Length: 128
Image 1 (cartoon, rainbow, N blue to C red):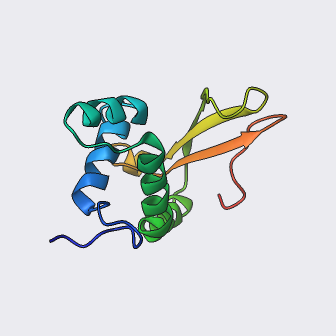
Image 2 (cartoon, helix red, strand yellow):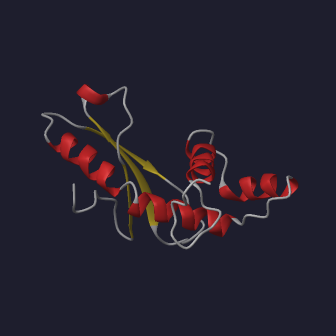
């Protein structure tokens, strides 16, 4: 049996977490729709559990990769930054922005996406 990515979960295997992430970020299927699809197949996994797994894996398993990509970006002479407003259900008052940062050297590769929420105006997180 495949080892769980999440220490307190028996079902959070690498393949199920990768599937959830691919459906959400590549195919744009939100967790609530994935929840409904999985329920039809007899696998009652909640959207809250999917979100918790993704956050846990991204924060604990992929932070080194993120740091490496960010370090490489900072070494580049020029950076391209795209700021896109993003609606969330969590807050009606806060403006949420989705930041995509790349350089000419890496335009065809996947790079870190930075997210910041501010009341007044968007800005890159302090670690950039």
